[in-house]
Length: 545
Image (cartoon, rainbow, N blue to C red):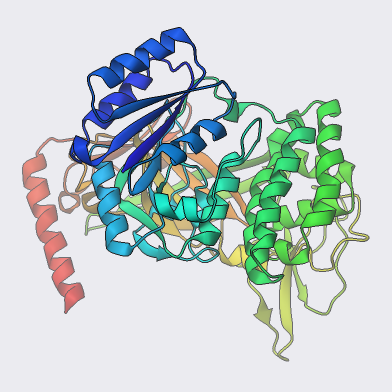
């Protein structure tokens, strides 16, 4: 095994990386560390030499300065003596035992690529890719595109035989180019999700947070798209893959608050590049898997409707969601039952308004939010329904502030699919960066959403938790909101502490600002816990039989 680390004038966090390599359970004779120094100069050179002096498995490659990590990584591939190459960046570190677990997993599955579980330190990471182990993942079916960082393990002979290299020099998205070449060439791609392997650390002022330069960034994106198109035929797989970059690298940049905050000059430069790029590279098949908001953005981009793109972004920025407790009570079985009212407004008026009509009816025109020309609307289920005569009905969004729908796709505002995926989750945040979903529902009516909490099950594996603020994650017609749960003190005044069968004592409290908190207390906790566990065992026995 060879660990390849591109190095350029590393800071104090580099010591954490070296320490994590020292703690690996793989015998030091079974792996090497290649510190590929990108022309850092004398102080760094001395630091690296001191590290290698006391570690026989560490080698330092002193290179000319290139300014980007592609060239040092390529030198690491060329110099590697191990069966596998694991890329690690200088500000990150490996979890204890990661190398041994990755090697064993690759050996067991004859893997060309292993995507070890990444954990974000100070940064959020996609979660779907690491829900469970996938020994043989399929590109386009499994969520491989969620994590295109180079922090993976590759079979060394596989990289060399297929000529898979990082682009060198000042190239954006160089990791996407490298990983996608590997994905297409690999016989077996494996995801190791059950063990944390790689800590991806967010550093202050990192380049990923800087605003891109459209004229130089998007040609590199097109290189990635060229790789995808060179390895796929026109059709669903290609559209599914291209959709990833369309959604994440273009549509995300012209949505909501980000779009509104752009200076006018920068916004014009951005659109000057992405409008023709969208027209040239992303067809209707790519749009088919997008949510309604992104479908609208895509259509407006192709039509070069810049004012409407700004109106849509301002509308999204101005959407306000509130989740309020209207009723609460404990059941005899120890469950806490809440009724929530969810409101989504724009400028104080109802937003995300819908109309149900026949599928063969003409598409209604757009209206301004809160305008006097409001169409007949519905607030309920939103899924396609059949009339008594068998004619299908569809649901359209009618509350967007577009100038018109002329020249846009006829069914652009149909939202039946999105409404079927509506969801309300009640979340407890009981520590920095931690959250627990206590209850989830697919709501039929946002004015009265019933959620329930089982305190025994919610807290049974977190003895150190004392509770915390409650929040609500609302998914409505493809838009997502994460808001604090609110309540008037009078609504919760009569709820009281949890009954004996709920286990340890729980109470609802309201802060001065009206936010709801779930407090966990311990008076008489031993007896209450025993009773709660007994009830839980009985319930499980009944469910089994």
